[in-house]
Image 1 (cartoon, protein in one colour):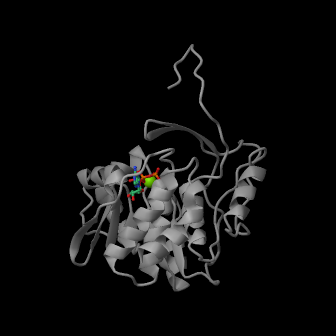
Image 2: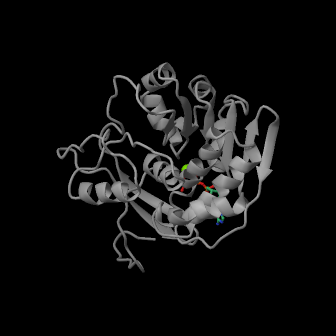
Length: 270
Ligand SMILES: Nc1ncnc2c1ncn2[C@@H]1O[C@H](COP(=O)(O)OP(=O)(O)OP(=O)(O)O)[C@@H](O)[C@H]1O
Ligand SMILES: [Mg+2]
């Protein structure tokens, strides 16, 4: 890892569109769903790369807003090493453009991170008014993870919550009750995932694969899990679909590199 006053050399460097919302959208699109991204694009010079990746993933970007050049681009430097990764991020204003209404062709709204859900709570009523179901990933956020008890109300307004194991443990330690959300899917890395619906917890192990870049595995998992859930599949099949998408993502650099294979892998597993 970089050390102040020294220089560290990486084996490789690549530039990708990222973020939980985009990677989950790309995972949905790879499974054949029409999907729109509602996000603020980074300002130049990164905007062109990100727009190219969004188009290549077959995700509609027409609702995205332009980045503000005055505050600089929102980018993350991800250093992947030894199966884990470290992030250095620059945040630049609101993550999503304001939407007056969510009436449209959409049936489901996914929040890429808990912070967006907390900052855009108006979207919950707008999604419900438009007849949509709602899900949210968690994402690492020290401040929010310490507020499990007070987040219970807002989390109970979504249908599916998808934290990873460390995030869920922190939220429960700070007072979130396990059953606060109707359906919780907890991602457990190479151990697979577990879900708690009306009948309690079920665990679905996975076959560990070699990790090239762990970034975005959880978001790719979301696309697979939610795709099964929206189709009314059994919870164990939703977990299997999530595990297949997560494993495809960790095997390649960036969050979406391995997603081209997931439709075939899911059909093979069915
Ligand atoms: N080494 C691995 N082998 C096989 N599958 C894996 C591996 N690592 C992750 N996965 C799959 O990806 C899913 C999500 O991974 P993880 O639990 O690391 O999520 P996460 O920490 O939210 O990831 P991120 O926040 O980087 O998107 C796991 O539940 C599992 O299905
Ligand atoms: Mg995650």
